[in-house]
Length: 336
Image (cartoon, one colour):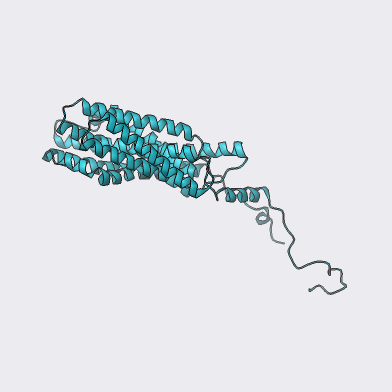
């Protein structure tokens, strides 16, 4: 019925009354506003220090391995073999140092430019360190240039809005890489367990199963590390600010798959920037050519395994933390 002049409802308007937002709606609105600017990644200092230490260890071990052999074909082979580890470490270090440098910046454009600049600085420092400590030759220049490019790409990655996801990816990658180094001590016993004998075929079959076991465990640890970081970062943000922007399942999926994605990105960087070194190592002999091809295929397979296992692990753990969907009271009441 329309409001007639002089009636008791004349003072009422046709506009609906304003409803105060509930606590859940208010927190959602705050989270929506918070996601309009880049996030804060807690623990960036620790991640940066660990990644710098890891990059230093990779550069030092590569240098010692090369200098411990006679110059020539052996040094070239070892350089090609060690290149993936150095590039992955440079990629992660560029990202973590850029996260630390830009963590307090609120403007997205400024943050991205600062992150790229920080990655460039990390790349330059890494390249200079390699040129000063390694032998001055074409192999050294290839390692230095490729590592610098990887650090710049890592810095650009840190300029993303979802800083917590980027930090989770770097932690997952560091976890997987450190595990691979520790796992090397168990390769020989596992080869015997998987049936490595005196024939070449049995050795190859055992090596394949050892590699799959390593990739499976690395992906599992990477997925767990990514989830634990995201869960810890949200609890810390809630204690500090009283609210934290929620992350939906795609963010956990990307974080869990991030270590594998970085390993595959490392392979792309190597095949572009380090192509000269790989070709030089493959040209040494027919056996070296077969070895380089097999190593490249193994790295790609490892990256794919870590990607899918890490993503699946993170999603499963995240799914187990979800409670039942709340049911409104109005739905429980029978219709009159």
